[in-house]
Length: 408
Image (cartoon, rainbow, N blue to C red; front, side, top):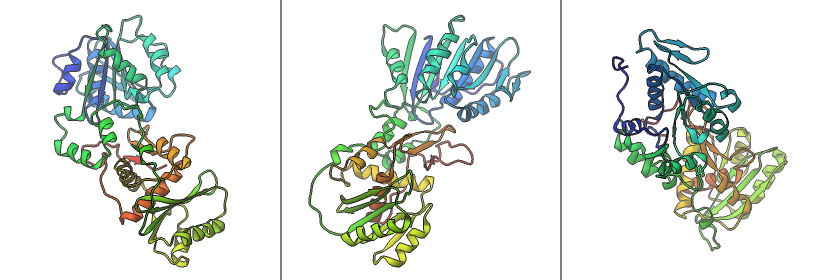
């Protein structure tokens, strides 16, 4: 194995590699190098004659690991990489395979010397407990768990076992993005300036936060009752069937009015918007126009108030929500106790997509119409949003042809 030119590990990776613990749990920040470390660890096991699996939460994410494995395998003479089943055989009896945990039952049956669970926090616990853990039994195999935290789920509980001195088979580490010497410090400094503090702590400091992927911090602390003065700004998020249409009026950073409804035709929606705006005489209205550009054009023609359209793309939504998250965290945006708005703000989250990017929006079964309308009203009051997000810096790796956030 020493004759093969495998990539060098950085200091943090070497610390984990040097551990003799059977189950190693690594909570690491983005760009720490978990994918390359996991692939190298699998290949080393195969070169020693063992059987290793590199397991990702989903099939598209497994494709990222497979690319890395293939790049390493070409450096091993007489290795055989089979694209169909994502398996690499090396001289001797060793081999490794890249698998996905989309269907945990598909992971049953193999006897393994090593399993690497990449982004374990985003994988269902049953993939480990019911499929992969039993596969290690007959060979007394080992496991390496690598992930950015996602709240305090089962990955967090594994991490705690690694911190317990009585758990002799477990070891765990908390390794931030800055641990990677190839990541420019200036990029992290910029991310810290641009991000709400909680996002930075979870994504780059690899801290386990109670509310996991929640975007907005201090949601209930921003509930208040106060008087306001000055110009009013209105944000409009349009919907018709499943999604609601929401109007939000913001004055002096405080929500002074909100209208939320579903199942209303466009003509009646326009009439409701006209009534809502006549009540507040807004200085500016911003309307989301992705699937109803004509609605905004009608508003520009017929309403006696300045109207702007807003096209939601992945980058524009990221910047829009970043700005609102900072404003709520600093209590620059506050609101009365409006259950629909408060519940949506608390549920709104960022999470990993199957391709390894980030998704921003409401979880399955929830809505984010009130959130978007409030964010548009805040944008109207600011004449734009501050640029910058944790996914904007050059070291953030997004698969080719994709953006860091996928609009819902």
